[in-house]
Image (cartoon, rainbow, N blue to C red; front, side):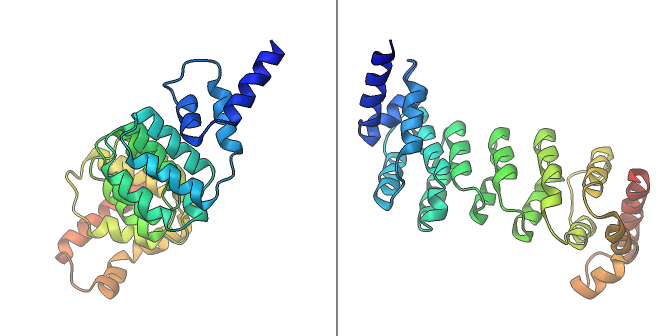
Length: 245
């Protein structure tokens, strides 16, 4: 039995890259799949290998194989090591029709700003993957907030809240958004989500910005809403802050 296993490992580790992709994908139901996965993890990810894998993404492969290819690229952080691959993978992600393969591509694109484009994808699992892997910076904060208060699924919104601690100095950005953005519905769900966001940022800074938020907006955004609208929105946000505390 051990001899047979060693022979299987020998053949898998000496297969072509294309053959290993098939053996490691969900299309292969045999017990050699884990060995094929190990072989792909052990492969040296040089420029030629990365380009060959990208060619497989563009080819007419089964979605399970495209998923495996993206996972391999993500495991080896190929897009980070070879910066030009980021644009290639992003273009592929924009046209990928299979949600599982797309989630794998987002994993391969983790920490790339461009991945935020996929936040509004109709498949909840895809949007949640974007929330998990998009970089925590001010460039992604605005789209995250916009989606959070305009229909983002509950589980995906909770994943976003869990990541808020990774952002730096965002209190004024959060409040500026909440004071100026228009929402589909400013009701109980809006209030509940405001409290969840408030709970994940620095409370002292948040309070300081919140009590002077209209002055800050006038200095930063010039003329926006009429004063009465600003006062009502500020009152509502202060009320949620008090309830959260």
